Length: 235
Image 1 (tube, rainbow, N blue to C red):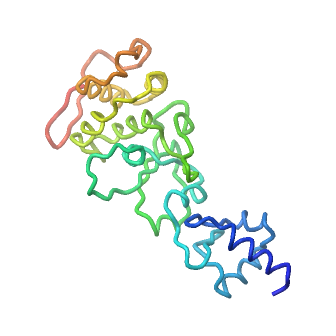
Image 2: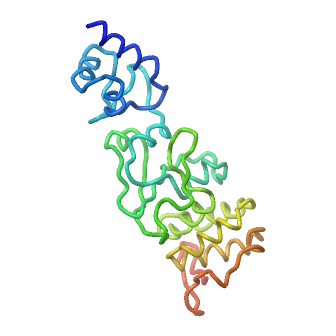
Image 3: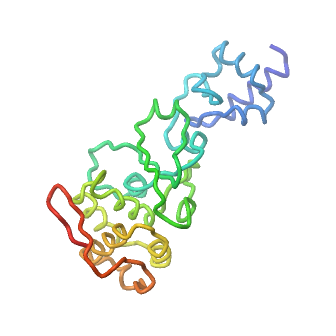
């Protein structure tokens, strides 16, 4: 190995953040060509995760850091985003990480193989995927609690149980009125909006006192019926 290649390797091994996959683009930006990356793999300094992704040998990918580099479209949302923000009802249950996108969620195949993921492809908000989605400390895009609760309720009853959803809503006393107002106005699902308002009233969430519901679309005056395992629910 030349002195130049050795210096590239030293930089990669010292600068690689534990748990964060290295992309081929990042390696190239630091002088490691595709051919040199293959050389590092053959000699045991790097491990290939999949096309265009590597890890320092002996390191293990961390989910949040992996999502920051291996998810092209989508974000962590719904129940997972609430759990990551500290709102979790069943601490002992290991759920799939739920990813949301207006289009198809796109993640690297190796990520799907290593982590339990679930995707929701739906246009829940007119404003797109960026509204109330922030990057966390590890670089993963995650829904703010105000968006996450609406994503959660959009899954009732097909993929989300009503009882757990109600228990989670009861925890959300810190919802920000301005952001909640914007999201409710932008939400394209009448069922989701009505369900949130019903559960928020039941839980007496403070945010309700500061919402202007005249600007929120709740559909016609007729009732909206949701069928759950526990029976029918009129919103």
